[in-house]
Image (cartoon, rainbow, N blue to C red; front, side, top):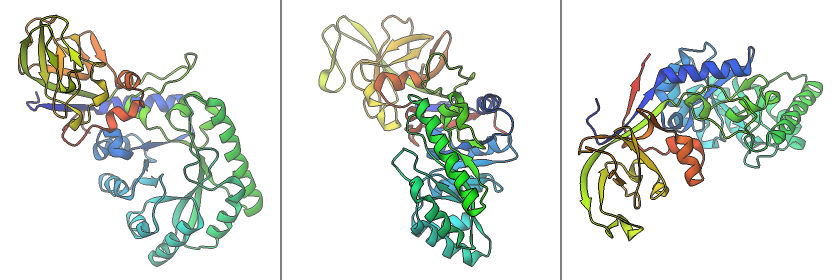
Length: 375
């Protein structure tokens, strides 16, 4: 049993279960790129990469930064790593040294990578992003041919795939379908004009589940791999996803406070009755959302109890008046299950109007991750 003030447990068997559910959903012949950016959405990039590598001989991984690519390379030496966000020209040497696959959004990036790759003597695979509506990165469809022609002129670069990003596959699956069609048309044009056959990928977790047309050659699930369910329409069948991460903290103090006593900063909560208040050893300095003050709840001794007052940097307070025997040292469950009560990260996200994966991604390094089912 962990003796620290706060910690997370990550169940690697749940990761394996969720990947199997996604594979069943997308069907045979569709590759799965495990997106492990942002420290695998707060779950720990190296242990997650090793687990996913043990399940898939293809070993495709998606990251957002070159430093993340290095972490995956260290954990899985034969991984196929795609840096999904734009890389800087100054990062070209690291990209090539790491044997990562960059995503091109323009000719400047291609030139910097080509010059470095030429020195290595090994052609560098690149994926080209088409901006089909995200408005963040990529090349517009009517500018694609020019970038492809320029890139094909570099013998040190090899175009492996076209890709795109969906801005709202959860809320606008129809838009994801039209964006997929646009990407397909781009690929057909490249085959006709340049004789170029490439792999296509576009779907995030929501699209992989809800938009079959978007699955193409490969899908890029992130949140669903970790058991976080996207917010989809009620008629969409969502796979049986098991949350991989649970979050716990110790009760540090239990105090009886009188009616009318204010709790936490700025006195945003005033006790309507005499109450027993427990101070729990976790706060926004650990990545637990400050916005859950006076909104969220935790589980103590199998019972939900409300957070009262503002969440502090290092602690939060809960009203345990109706739970017998709460004492310092007890475990509070902030995400996970205790007895018949459960709290999912999705619930916390919807309480404060953020995304599901923001809840786990924002947990700081002050929260140690303990792994169950280590391979």
